[in-house]
Image (cartoon, rainbow, N blue to C red; front, side):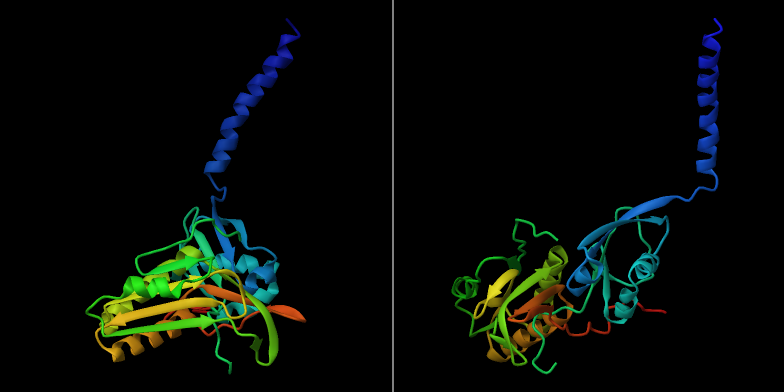
Length: 277
């Protein structure tokens, strides 16, 4: 019988200790949530990863998340004035409040091809009504044939092509990456805006990702409309806006190294990572 006493004491001790732990957890212990963080382009190289998960106190903002990474990587703070942010694939400001399991993306200026003066890839190929993202060669002729109708008086096509040099430096090939779900949504939005703004009948936008060789097409924009002026205006607006807003980046490979292409600044309406500071 005596041998049972220590066992009973231990059992009673364990039982009586549990409420104390729970009470401590319910009074004063910080409640945490986990969010997913994505890095693209040059930021991926800077932090040494393309994705991360971080625990933050409930009610934290994107600014709180950034502060954590600034401590880990002081170089990130220097980049904030040029960075945009997205929460769950929508552009957002640093004061946006986060919820458990949110997805936060840190976006360097996009580089759909800057002017001369200046993670893992899913198996599927995202496509919408007007836009698609592909990894194979873009078929311009098939795309144009699909768009054309008898009432069209103009068909205008823009093809962005990989050239063999950048500012006099010989280019071997390019490698494109994107925040794919958000990029497709942005491309679809641009197509819809162009149709309303310029009164064109239809448009197709195709962007290719992955490794592209010299002479290959990286982006195709095809516009059909009753009149040529509208087609010209829409096509120019689409490629210029795409290069500023759609989260797609390119890395250029040269004979003597590689670098992420300089992106154009985000439009003023897109908040920067250091907004309000």
